[in-house]
Image 1 (tube, rainbow, N blue to C red):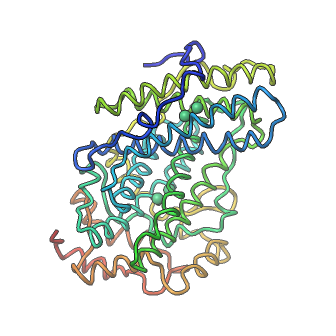
Image 2: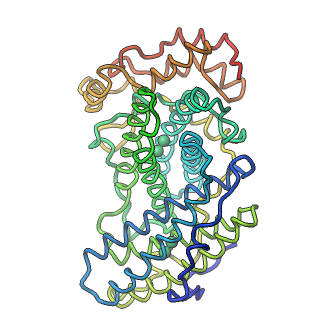
Image 3: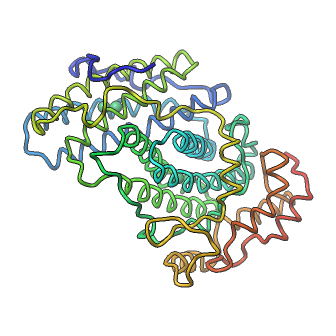
Length: 431
Ligand SMILES: [Fe+2]
Ligand SMILES: [Fe+2]
Ligand SMILES: [Fe+2]
Ligand SMILES: [Fe+2]
């Protein structure tokens, strides 16, 4: 389904107010919901948080009365949309269960975007980030079992693998190295712009969620793991947002935000099988078409340009969720040793200079051990091994992958060794 969103009328903004009941009453059953309905719910919450945040920023930077009024009205609408979507999560879904959902979003969304990205350099950045969120999922899965006694597949439903990725302790980079080359707003495809905005919103909300909820557990090692991974999500926001051309004007950005909301809602609506949730995507798509229409008017008035120059004349699918095991396993096997280069490029562990700026960061933050490594020691102490959910081919490759993915410099004390991975591979995990 593709259409020109600028040709659709949508619902006028003054008709978008809803009752408290309508805003807050819906929730899904955590045991019955499809895992990809949950990933859509998590992502669209992030999209709304970003839309709301951006509008507040814009409002603090404009003197135009009609723009201020449009922002004032729609900030409230975006905020109510956020409530409806985020509160679909039921109160009995634990923080760690939700966390597995967040990392499933990151893995399967990033893999989808990498395969649907016209810009090669942007695609490479997605492949790079992918292996980091993949490793987060592995670490959190151990905790979900240790704290709540759950199988990670209760949440992932067998659609996403759980195993060692690029080890989390090596995600801690010098944030200057995280900065990427931005696209050129005049030549980049609208799809590239929408893809990046979608992922930035997802990563930012993941960061916020860990910041707001990681402390809800008393276990010190788990708290530290949340703190450690939250910091990586902060790096991810820095990395992905730096792909955006910083010379885009506020009006151009407004247009892109509303367009991204239109694209993501139409994609969710098209894929959703849960009728109750589908109704929400459908309703909010019509809201967003109303926002986009007004944003396009403001863009024409103040920039004196055709909105189609920025967003083109059709919608994209920036968030189609489907199992990405084959794609992820290929990237895992071939790119686990990839690292950030010094010229906004990529390199491998073997080619890193001795004075690589991230070594200093890793040595400092991991001075007394990396919680993400201790996580594996803790579960191995209880169960003689870690939880892995992957094909036999991938499982048998764990020691080899650990050897390829672990650095010798910048390695935290008491990291899990290759020998320990070999030993764990001989054991079976009894749930
Ligand atoms: Fe919205
Ligand atoms: Fe992550
Ligand atoms: Fe991330
Ligand atoms: Fe909107």
